[in-house]
Length: 144
Image (cartoon, rainbow, N blue to C red; front, side, top):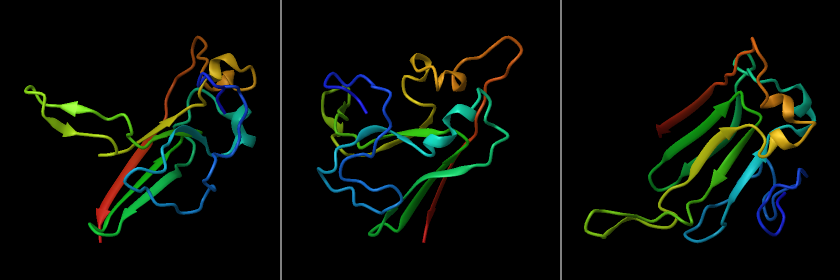
C-alpha cells in the first residue's frame, strides 16, 4: 500500500479490483496499474540477498487473443512491479508520436518496495561483507 503521496506504507494488501491468480483484461484505458505485487508475504523474512538457488516462480502471464502471442515472467524474486504504461510518451526527433499511453506494459521482478526502511524486510536488500547478491528472471514468449 501507499499513502496519498504514493509513499509505501509497509502494509501488504490486495490491489483494488484485481484478485490474485484470476485473469483480467488490459483494455485500451483500464485498468491503470503501477504497483508492486508480492508473491508470498509469509516468506518475506526468509528472503536473503541471493535468491539464485531458489526455484523459479511464475510472476504473471499474458495472452493476446488476436495476435495469439503469449508472455510469461518467472523469477526467484519475491515481488514484481507491474506498470500498464499510462505515462508512456515517446517521440521521434521531429516530435512525432512513436509510442503513446498504453502502447506497452512493464513487468519488473523485484524485492519489496521500501524494504530497506522496513526492519522485517531489510534482510532481502542488505548485503553484508562476504555475501553475494543475485537473482534469476526468465521471460518466455511464444505464439500459438
